[in-house]
Image (cartoon, rainbow, N blue to C red; front, top):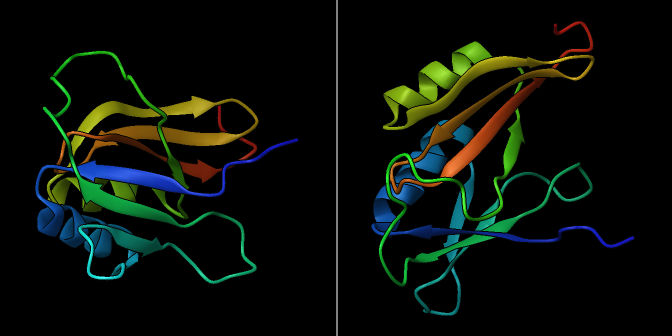
Length: 128
């Protein structure tokens, strides 16, 4: 079985996107070899999850109310309501409000400062 090992975020304004994800999730960004590409550390090695990259968008950004046309990464969070509030305060908009995924948890989708959709999931087997 093959699993994802890396993700990428495309941004119109890389500085704004880096500030957003650093503030929201505490991710660490480091520019790679002087290139317009930043490696993203999302957690410590040996813990669940994957790391990624951020790069300048090569074309127009997502259009409002258009269907998702790429992968949506979902981040595990301890308190979904608090994280949605934090995301909005950092510049996100709500794409899909909090909803129950029965026996799994609570899920919400937001759009980052660059118009990219991402999910946040609070694991809770009692969600209904």
